[in-house]
Length: 305
Image (cartoon, rainbow, N blue to C red):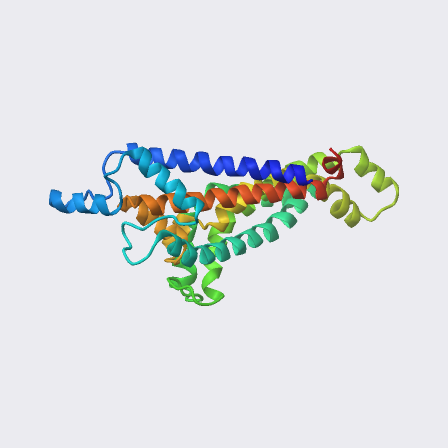
């Protein structure tokens, strides 16, 4: 197990380095610069700004300087927010995005697990068709459109909740539903298909022949065996949700990392773009590593291998 962890950690570090290199290269070859704007700045001002942020150095020196900073946990200064570094911005906003993402994951699992079980157990029934219709709708509906609809209906028409704030549990309900709806629908559809296949396996028929309760057959035998595909997609899905959906945070004016990423792209704030990208990559590596470890607990055959 320790050897597996070390291999995964090495691969994770390699992935982070490749992403950092590609992102750095793409930002440098993209047309335009961080100080280009509709209002032209004098050449002397641009030269001073480039000298301040070391953009006048050769690209390879900028690259090595940036890698050295990352190794020391410093993502560099922000070109847009002059009084805050990228590390400080990420430290301030990542907890908000993580809380929203964690709530969305919890919401998705609470909806997907019972819906997938019901749809598979009552296959080809009205319950199955209803669950799959809602799942298809959830997958097809863009989250920005769902968020706008919830704001219009729940906040503006019914007046039940307020939007544009992030100061209590109620303010997280609509963003949580908006962010978790599509993952819940996708996981429910995936779990249904794997459960239908599992329910036809010999070990399930054997468990029923032994006289076990149907709840035990479904919950202990069939569901555990069907969680492998769900865990596979949970890794990248959890990373995406934990960093927060950029669009959802923007729609609900949540002070998370996603809003800063959008403004960083429009402002060509290179260090902030790279900082957010690397945080997302690191979370993706960590969640995939956690999923690899969970495989062994869900399916003992994988643990033996």
